[in-house]
Image 1 (cartoon, rainbow over the protein chains, first blue to last red):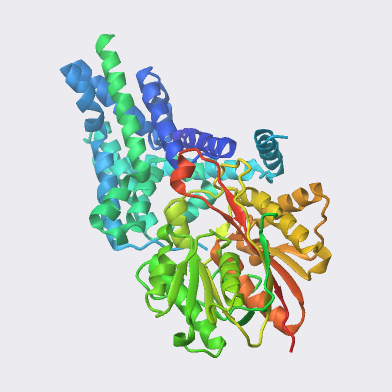
Image 2 (image 1 turned 120 degrees about the horizontal axis):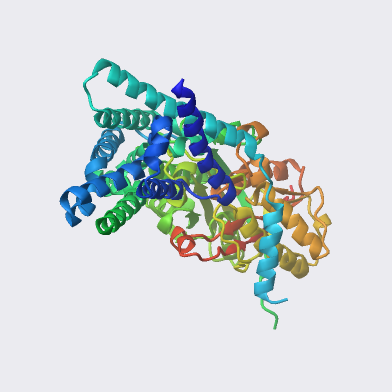
Length: 118
Length: 148
Length: 334
């Protein structure tokens, strides 16, 4: 049943991105930056976990989840290690995703060629 | 009428002249595709936890995201992801798969300029600002939490 | 003395050969029956799209020379340009021709710019055979001006499709073919548009300026021409031009059209139409030349427009300057 929530909230978050595109014609880089910052803010104000509890993948799969993990990692590490945690925590928490993106992009970049869409 | 007034008047005229697209179809498709990608992520996550019941939720999420990133990167390579993006818009940009697409697409586009200066450098044209802004913001949040 | 913008060619430079080559998508468009060569694959057997664009120009130059029944050694001067930084496609293509070369940059107006310069030189008796050429490629332009091809993003409705294609023609002192009778060199016009996805609006004021100058200098009206054709204003841009001309008291009728707007069929989802150097160059060197030779058209005003855009300047928030050159091509006497 929670798949319905995942679908509805995930779809809604993505639709917000589309609203931004229509309203201001912004590029995908700006959209991604905006949503990452939204994620950081949600986590900083402690709201992300409430949403995540029932939205699950609906909020974690959108790039908002990436921003939230960054902030969550930083906050957790600050509590455990002090100031140094602010610098190490964020990337530590998201290292898997970032490294995966680089590795796969590197491999597929070598294998495939770009094609013109018609 | 001086040049500044003329330009302003012309800009306003052009703005009114630009054909208005109906937003509803693209909003619907972005909702649909975005929702499906999120459900796919949830499905992968549930399967992982089904096969490895002892795995921590946090680790399972890590694997889920890596699998999604892999899928999007592969679909970009075979030239499918841009076709999805054409009608899905925000639906395929906002999920983590869009982030993966934004790294893989310049990588294959610019590999003819060499592995170092082409592929490796251009990988960051879109992902760079995303990672940098996210990290800067998270460090700021961490420092603020140090004092509260 | 009044400033000179329009020149008349009394010695009647002749276009003795013309050639067009297009990509697969363009080969399904409205002009498909007129092109000389349609590529099956837009990489044209090369490793990169840049190399394909260079090869297209070479192919078009050789094609035009052959259709003019000349040898490459008969050519005195090559005038060419394209959209890429440092006009590499043209200059690198010119390596293979042992003749003088002038690289031109007029963005999408390069075809008219090269014909106007070439006709001036031939008319003055300075050169015998001059080749004018230009090309554009969708994939090289996207990569330089916009985003990687595989990035999943949507194109705004005002954006245009850069035509993959090259066109060439040979100008000579005498021979059989359409005649270049006059040219109007355009001014750079900027009416403060900075939307890189709306080139039609950038270039329409330049087209208006050149058109007004041309009609005033040659004492003609739109009715004197069988066809008035702009390059790549697209659907939106040509509507703007019609409005702007109406404000100036000149009504553009059914003999006005735009290459970009005509280029693709409705089903091809090219949004506001075709654009790029190759857009008007391939239409001129196929459809228009054919109609001039058949006698369907007697006098054509060919006036492609160009947006002199750079991504660096656009990112720094500069507005985009536009330009438009006009040439009059008439049917030669038999």
